[in-house]
Image (cartoon, rainbow, N blue to C red; front, top):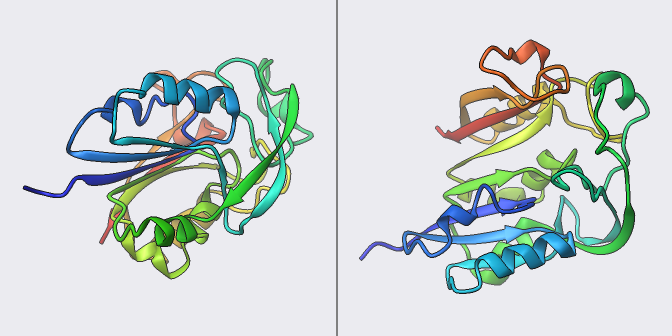
Length: 217
């Protein structure tokens, strides 16, 4: 009998990326989500599934504690450890969900520490959507990034379109970092169209944010 594969959902939000695997014996899922309301939602949805584990903590490149900005509007998907950028009314015209509704204190962990604690020696898929700090999640693996077999990661197309202040790594940085860590890029998809919902005709050059899918070479 084969060992189940490991799926890390970092910035799990409402679980749209990982809940379909809840109850699937071929997978063990670790869903990292610091927002209490969303973490409770994940626990409730997966309460009967022994393969789905909710970790109510933030993930970055250094452990510690910090204020977490909850944007409790829309799908709550823009909550972040970072603050919104000053130019979002220009770069994301018409969006009304970019507003902090409350702040909470959260614990921050690194995936390296988590994997060592749980004795995890392979991550088959690493989904990263933590709003402006996605590449820091990979940096936090340190030399253990070698255990990652593939995944997908979000990033801003460039510094002019980034949603958050102090967002260090944009598309070109992430691509270079993935290559240097032994990955090849399989696909690049737009996450929006000039800040609005994607259509079948949406182009990478018009997107503020991109999703990069990668696998180990």
